[in-house]
Each structure stands twice: as C-alpha cells, then as structure tokens.
Image (cartoon, rainbow over all chains, first blue to last red; front, side):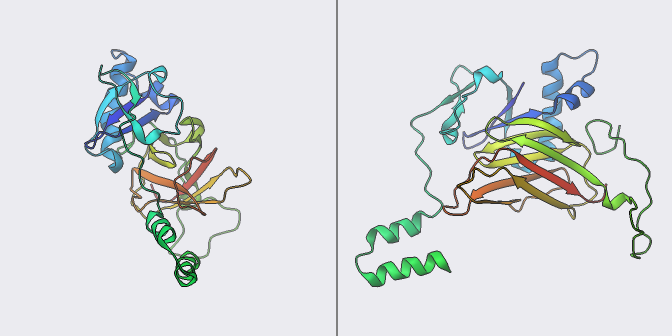
Length: 120
Length: 130
C-alpha cells in the first residue's frame, strides 16, 4: 500500500515501505492502514525530501502505470488516487538555455560558441 | 528496538579498528561491514531485495530517496550506486546533496542530455558507522 505525499506545490511523491519492515512494525491492535500511516510519520521525519508533504494512502491500482508523464501526477479531485493532469506544463529541458542558443545561432561563430560550451 | 530505527536490525558485535592502525587481513570490523543495500526497479518502484531499508520514495523520474531503517551515526558514510545499462544510454548517479543520517536521495541522469532517467535496477550499498 503506497503512501502518496501531496507536496506544497501540488506535486506527488510516493513511498513504498519494505514488506518485511511493515510486517514487523505492525502492532496487534492496528490495521495495515494504521501501521502504514504511523510509519509514514517516522519516515517523513527521516526524509527531508518529504518535508511539507501530506500523507494519503492509495492502492497500486489507483496510481498511473505509465511514468512517461510522471511530472503531471496530481491528487485526484475525489481524494482517492492519482491522476495525470494534462494542464501541467512540460518542465524545461535541463539544457534549455543551450538549446535556445543553438536555435538562435545564425553564424558559424555562434555555433562554435555553443559547441565549446558543450565540450568544456 | 534500536533507538534510531523503525524495526530491529541485528548487528553482530564486532571490534572497531584500533586507533587508526592497519586492519588485520580478512577481518570484519564494525566499520567495514555493509550497513545497507537495495536492489530497486525504478520504473515500478519495486524493491527486489534490501537490507536495513525502511522504504523508498519516488520523488520523480530518476529521483528516489532511500530511507534507512536504522540510521547512520552521522552523514559521513559512503554510498555507491550502480544501475542497469540499456546499452545505448550512458548515465550517472549523484546523491543530490541531501545525504542524511536517515535517508539518501539519489538521482540518475543521462550523460548526453542531463535529463533524469529511471534505471532498472538501481543498486545501492552504504557503509559507515551506526
């Protein structure tokens, strides 16, 4: 049962607990969901990348299988599961500035400068 | 239950190196034992097997955080990542500057475009003081 973290910017992170660890952590009086949520608090405290996230439980079936648009994953309006939000813009390429320079290059000198930046 | 961990981890009582002296050959010390490892399929966030790992967090494509079950004593531990090669794409790993006693965030990037990429499997080992 993955934990879905809704981050302050609306993006989604998912945590998967190791099965053996989950089984060992489970207390007799707890449901699996209660154990996962209790562990979510512990994991969040140990994991800076989850700071500010709000935990929700989902089933694997409620998550997109296709990761090609992972950056568009958002919480489903119903509160259950994850959807792919097509309104989320594609993030810039890591080397977008260089690509822009290449697109605007008009002379051999311009192209040499771009190539030099790639090689240095 | 260990003070810093989520569940029990059995670590044998091994001697430390003595005063920075030369280690004996073929000898286990507390600080040369692997304290955590994992084999993970990033594309499905599936953990094939692991030791001392509580959970993995999928932050984004090519961006995962491994949360240790029993924390390290400090952030001065060593970690190595390795991954499956598609045969056509070269990539490299970094810990993204967020190595912590309780977790480590690892990113995999293509060497040609610098874009984040899922690598299957991602294999990580960590050695340090508990």
